[in-house]
Image 1 (spheres, rainbow, N blue to C red):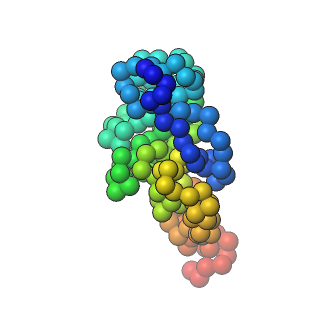
Image 2: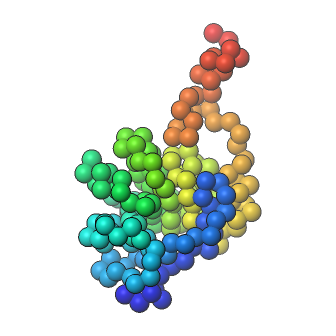
Image 3: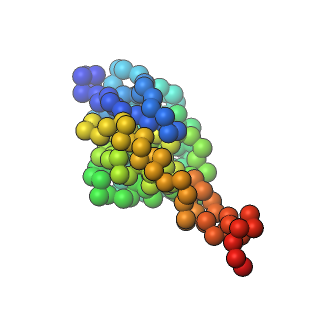
Length: 173
């Protein structure tokens, strides 16, 4: 596959901080790029899973199973594709990877990733966010810091706000 067809992230936020992205992205599923490191479609990664310079990306309709989660545990990172910002299935995939399958590696959002989604993505278990090219880093960082308290439990905060207040003695029983 010609490396010219690889995509490169303009803006990557990792663990809440801007970072230079060393990984390229390939959306071609029938040829392995020569450039490394590269994120490739799941089927291509599975055929070459011993190559630590390859990482898989999951389409939003991927069905997670115990077997697949076991395979993904050895990946250097797992990217989840958002084909459209209105497609919320990627949130579920990230949450399942973190909570049900105890995946501890990097989970990266790729595709149609908008600033307005970032806070909710981190709540579901994403720790790396590859913004769509027309999204601005400053806006993204501001959006990630917009909320200081979460009311509901999620991957990032396990207790509901009322439970934290009761535990800390600040609530009314």
